[in-house]
Image 1: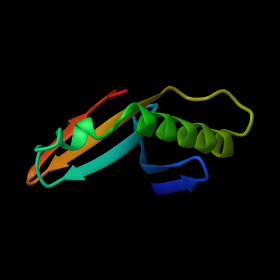
Image 2: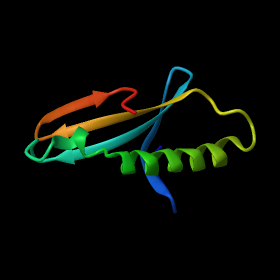
Image 3: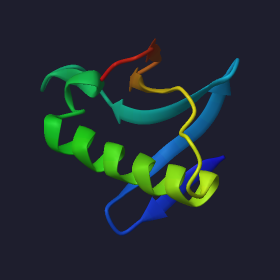
Image 4: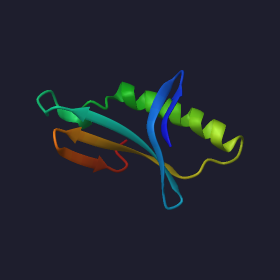
Length: 88
């Protein structure tokens, strides 16, 4: 699934890894000159992604128990791509 949007935030990708749900934040920067793509996932951005994930889980699961989940970051800088599992 791509780009789940709600008032409180947005999820770039929602995937599964085995029986775990993975919320993926994708960040792209031309270079690492100002801290790079991974550094651009600030605490504020993390809060927005968490809130969007809560909304997603609420719509997808109803009132049932939430599955195991994690937050990954895909950081793209030029031609370099880093996948950071359980980034926050």
